[in-house]
Structures are given as structure tokens and as C-alpha cells.
Length: 294
Ligand SMILES: Nc1nc2c(c(=O)[nH]1)N[C@@H](CN(C=O)c1ccc(C(=O)N[C@@H](CCC(=O)O)C(=O)O)cc1)CN2
Ligand SMILES: [Mg+2]
Image (cartoon, rainbow, N blue to C red):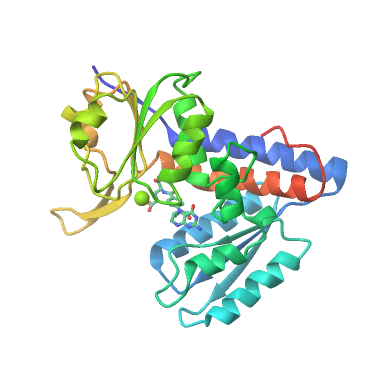
């Protein structure tokens, strides 16, 4: 058995094209141009790459990109003042503070300061609480992408056994809620869970978001399971260069799983595409327009 490869690049490109169509429509019909403000504090090289990709993809979708770069030693007060300014700016419909923030800054306070209507990361407690309550909410982008990738191979997730490995606010917890909304039966496991291989063996859907390179082995998987790999770790190669790997031992899993996302080229591709979806949805909601078709 060789698993079907779930191609995040192709699925993300299709989603971006649908967002661009809807952006063109709201511009034409309502003179509304969605705007996304991204705040980058410090100069973490990976974060710089992600922020650049957000700018390029936002502009390619026909939306306005606002970028704010602050030094790593910016004060909490100055960062909060910028968020307050973006909350008031009518051209800004989405606000995203790139994470992680440098040490010394209070991430929780910064996220709490974002207007929940503009919280396109879905991290504000209002949105997290609404999602947990089963209400309409802006939801975190990576979990949204995981659901879209899963639905590319399963029309319905109803009654399927899903396991989510990891309980972060950015991925694991919101992913559990989105899976519940799809009527899946969800187990959430984490660093203190016991007998992980046995738990994983029961799952039709495996979501690995622990940040531990190749932790999930091929023989943990139920034959035919769908594997969505959310981890990205850069590891050294023999030639002195590095390569990216996920939380799942990909080559082993290929022989057991029914379908699997590669790293890179899987979930990561969906994160920015779903950010565009959230920005469009936030702009329509703020303008009092019906939910867009994407
Ligand atoms: N405020 C936020 N901060 C962070 C988030 C987030 O959703 N909101 N997620 C990650 C970083 N991230 C976006 O911000 C992100 C991660 C990965 C990718 C991606 O395209 N990955 C590629 C590989 C990229 C590479 O070569 O390094 C892939 O998997 O194919 C996009 C966005 C943490 N911070
Ligand atoms: Mg992770």
C-alpha cells in the first residue's frame, strides 16, 4: 500500500484563487477592499519568511497589505499602542501579530488587545470561546487548513475517530473544536498522555502537532488512516545542510497510511491561504455584508 499524497500546494492555490475571485466581487459590488495588517517584532528569520509570504499572497489576492516591523526591544506599551491604532483604522479588517514574540513581551496581553472582529488568527479569547461553544467565530488558520486538507480525501468526517497530538492554542485546541463541528469523535493527546502508539492505532484521522521530529512512527498507524502532519522541524543532513521534517516518520507512514500530507508542501501551505479567507470574512462582517462564498 502506498498512501495518497495530499498536495497542500495545489489545494492552497485553488483556495487562494477562490479568495481572489470573491475579493474582486466585493470590490466591484460594494467598493470594499479587505486590508490585512501584519505586525512583526524582532528579526527571527523564519518569521520574516512567513511575513513576506503573507504580504505577497495578500497583494496577489487583491487585498491591501499593511506591514509593521518593530525592534525586538520594543516596549509592551508601544506594541499595545500600535494594536490600538490598527483597531481604529477603517482600512484594516484583519490584524495578525506574528508569533512567537521576543522574550519580555506579554503575548496574552497583546492578543487580548486585538479587536475580536479583526482577529484573523482566531486567538482572542472571544473567538476561542465562541469556537469552543460551537458558535460562528474567526478560527485559527492552521486548523482550518487541516480540515480542508482532510475533506479533500473524505467528503464527511462524521463518526470518524480522530486523534489530535498537541494542545496549543494555535493548533491543537482549536482543531479539536473544528473536528467536533464535523461530528468526528475526537481524542486529544499531549506530552503527558500515556500509551500514545495505542491511542494513535485507533484513529482514522491522525493530526500531529507536537513539534517533535518524526515522533509518530509508521507502526503506530492504523492501516489506511489519514495523516495530517502539522509539525515542521529543520534537522541537519549529512552534507552539512538542513532539511524540513514533520512530526510523522514520512517514509514509514507512506506504507501504512491511506493518505498523508508531506512536509513541506502540506499543512504549511494552507496556513497563509486560510489567513486570506479569514481576512475576507472579517472585512465582509465588519462592513455588514453577507458571508462570502469562501
Ligand atoms: N500569528 C501567527 N503566528 C504564527 C502562525 C500563525 O498562524 N499565526 N503560524 C506559524 C508560522 N506560519 C505563519 O505564520 C507559517 C508556517 C509555515 C508555513 C509554510 O508555508 N510552510 C511551508 C514550509 C516553509 C519553509 O520552507 O520553511 C510548508 O510547510 O510547505 C507558512 C506559515 C507560527 N507563527
Ligand atoms: Mg507545532
